[in-house]
Image 1 (cartoon, rainbow, N blue to C red):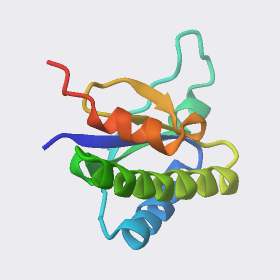
Image 2 (cartoon, helix red, strand yellow):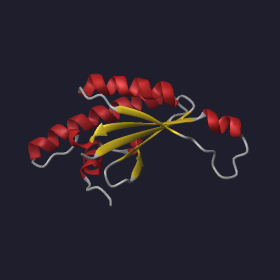
Image 3 (cartoon, rainbow, N blue to C red):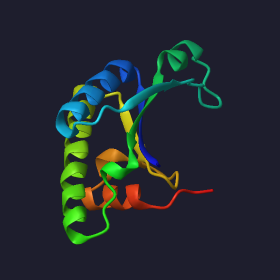
Image 4 (tube, rainbow, N blue to C red):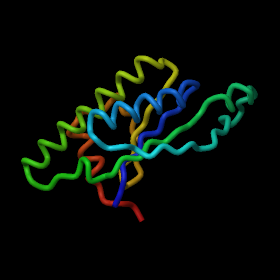
Length: 130
């Protein structure tokens, strides 16, 4: 099954990922998988110490949590999407240096704080890219 990936980047990403995973587990009853990715400094970034201190963590949620075909399922999916968005926004407020992006099965990455629930459901419902 495809998954929705929340990518957390910033100096507080490790703690924020723990907070976000715990809140999502409580709010949705789904335990996201957390994986750490190597962070490389941007091209031309000379401050390697700072760049290496910034963690990138990915929380993976089952794509089916937001997939909905009929109107009732879509409404329920939007309620779950609202929970994900609210929790993500709260975590971003607690960690001002944090950036959270979300990507669905097609791989497009979008800053999560800019999405509405219906847009997150649409993103999760996209077919996987090959």
